[in-house]
Length: 267
Image (cartoon, rainbow, N blue to C red; front, side, top):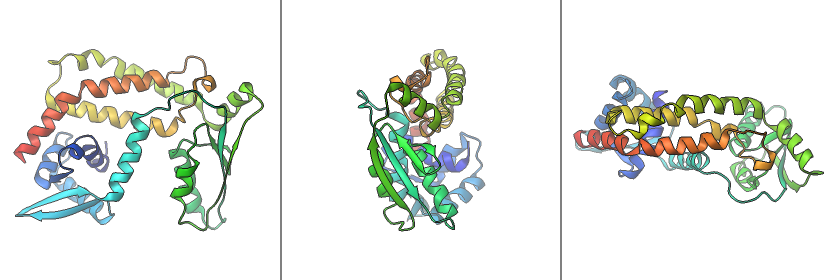
């Protein structure tokens, strides 16, 4: 787990509910649970402040850090993708984005593709991306200030369910994703019994384990388009993995928060 990601995760899972800010001394103590030395913490927060993710203020001789509005927006967007799943039946419509970016703007094109994947779109071809969920508004808003990007959006239906399944298999590598879900289930499914036992883990161990769980799961929602059940391969393990993640995250919560509260009080 990278120190920069740990800072974001600590704010997202704990500090947001405890005033949204933290003294440097307390942050050093929290990061120490993950064997991150104080010198590294100071370098990381200085860089994050310079990049516009953190803001600071003085309180006596102490420095107090908080996330900026842009950082909170990024965290909130990511949290929705990680913890929520689409509900209700699919209406059978695909939501499509067709983009055009000047050849000279390769960096912008790559940023657009990453953003499309972030919103759950998959590539049907290099410039045609689609999703079973209506998130075209988010894509348009994200690039509203980029005149070099031309985006056209459409809604359409295929010839039927067989064609829809073929489209899904071409736009996303569901086989590899399902195999990765299986590995996650094997790893953390074996740990659930310990998570359920209040005496099996110390508060600090629970904090570290919960953060590792979030770290290991966090990229799945950005690879997984959350397809309707009728488009998924038989035996799909994504929903089971999501349910396991939510259970494990909840089981570790009280002990992890106990450790965070203790360190904040001492800091």
